[in-house]
Length: 327
Ligand SMILES: Nc1ncnc2c1ncn2[C@@H]1O[C@H](COP(=O)(O)OP(=O)(O)OP(=O)(O)O)[C@@H](O)[C@H]1O
Image 1 (spheres, protein in one colour):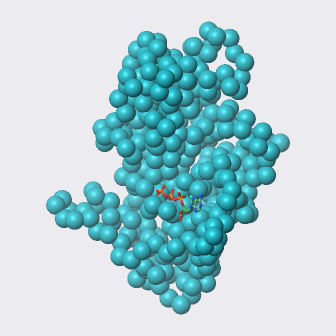
Image 2: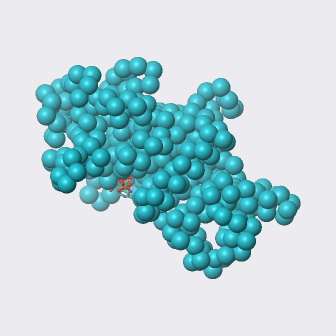
Image 3: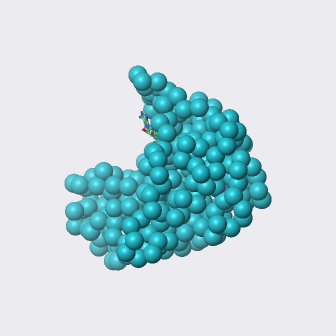
C-alpha cells in the first residue's frame, strides 16, 4: 500500500554488515533519516563512514557477504527490506534511480548515447519510438547538454568528462524517478563544472518534486545543494539538521571538526586542520560513541550506547556532552 501523504523515504534503524574472515564489519549501524518529496538530503562523512553502503542498502544492492541485518527502508510507504529481487529490480529501473561517480564505468563506449539513454527507458516501459526520442531529448536538455538532438548520435568519447557525467544523470532522469541516489557524482570534475551540475540538479528537483540523496565528503558542495544534511561517522548518524543548522550552528563535536577542516573555513595559505586521531575499525565495533577516542569532550558514559537526542523537528544529535549552542 502506498502512502502519498508521508515522507517519500524513511530509513529506520538500518543496520548493514559484511561477514568477513576477520569478523563482522558493521558498516551501517542504527541509521535513521527521511527524505521528502522535492527535497535534497546530503549525506556527508569521511571515507569509510558508511555513506555508500547506506545508499546501496536503499537500492537493494548489498550483496554477499553483506546483508541488511535489521531496520526498515520505507519508500512511498512500502518496505524495501525483504522485497523480492524481481520487484526491487523494477523499482530501481522505474522509480528509484542511481548516479555513480565514474561515468566511464556506467556508459558503454561503443554505443551512441541516445541509444543508451533510451535503453534505460525501454527496459521498463513499452513506449512508442517517437515518445522515447522526445523523452531522451528532454532529459538531455534538462541537464544542460547543448543541441541534444544532434548529440544523441555521438559516442561517449566525443564528450568531455563533465558532459559525460551529465549524460549519466540524464539516463537516470529519463524514467522520471521519484527518488535519485547520487554517490559522489561530481567529485572527479572541475569546480566550475561541479557548480553547473549542482545548479541544474537543484532546479530539476524543484521542478519535478523528486527526492534526491546526494552522498559526498564535501560539505561545501552540500551547502549549495542540500535542504538537509545527515552527518555520518564510523557507520552511525551523529547529527541531522537543515543545511543552515549544520553549517551555521553545528552541535556534534565531530560535525564541528569536519566543518573546521573545510578549506573556506581556514585562513588562506594556512594548511588544512586535520582531525587528530583515526576513525575506529568497523570490525566488531561496539555500540558506544564511535567518536569518543578522538573527542575532547568524552566522558565515561560515551562508552555506552548513545541514543540520538531530538533537539527540534528538524534536528537530532547523538552526543552525551553537547557543547553550547554556538561554536
Ligand atoms: N563488500 C564489502 N566487504 C567488506 N567490507 C565492506 C564492503 N563494502 C564496504 N565495506 C566496508 O564498509 C565500510 C563503509 O564503507 P562505505 O563505502 O559505505 O564508506 P563511504 O563513507 O561511502 O566511503 P567513501 O567516501 O570512501 O566512499 C568500510 O569500512 C568498508 O570497508
